[in-house]
Length: 325
Image 1 (tube, rainbow, N blue to C red):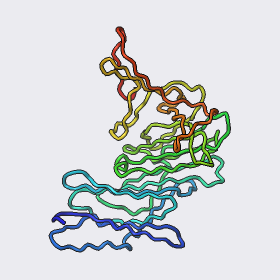
Image 2 (cartoon, rainbow, N blue to C red):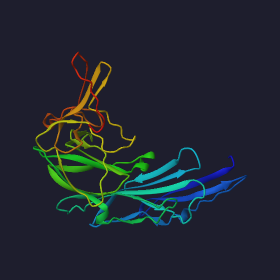
Image 3 (cartoon, rainbow, N blue to C red):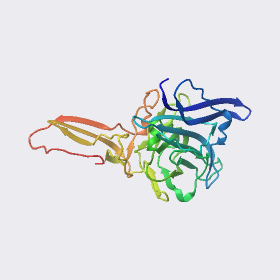
Image 4 (cartoon, one colour):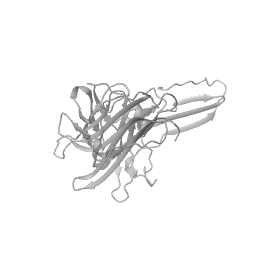
């Protein structure tokens, strides 16, 4: 191994009466100048990832991400995520002297079954630069955006929903999403960590197959940033449905959006959603099944986005459309 500065992570997995546990022991920095032995102690991962929320909630998914940068070159990242998993992490008290270190912790929690209106907490926390903090986090109501959702549908069904996101930096190692069942029509409240650098996207499916697990129809939301304390109402699939342009609400190269209208020479390209509701950046989902590609029930009534290209003729003006359109 060449001489230089390194970091190490020990990943210790155990099964027991208390369930599936992962202990993440981190050595943020050590120096190699010759033959070197590095020890990473499992017992140093003594801080369990836990969340305290304003309302009672049940943990559904937890993730932990580390990004380590050096003096030069690209940063390296590693992440863990799981459902029904206990994560324990080793906090640190000394910053690396070479490069940087950033820790992110995210969690998704849902309301108990007896809640009159179901609710969800989508939480994301960033540790102080250079340190891994203790892993108990308190989500205060003032730090959250509140989205009151209503799902409109004429025919009752069991569908599904999903929300995923976090800090933009977390997408370097990947962001995991869990799909939950949803009774339609219905209501739900989502509480999301708000602030710059945090993005969220929600989606739902109108129908789910208990036999195959396929998901059909529905709508999807673009990634967006929410402010702490912000209150929003989202009316999924509310009549009247109408065409809508493609929209980008996040200025990041991670989420590229094709403009709804563009021209390259004599080629005119149009890309839009024929059926959208009255919410900005909400678009209809592809009409085919999301997993196996099977047909969609006729009652869903959602059509694919329309893509058209045609040769321009004299008199057709130049088209320039920047995202958002």
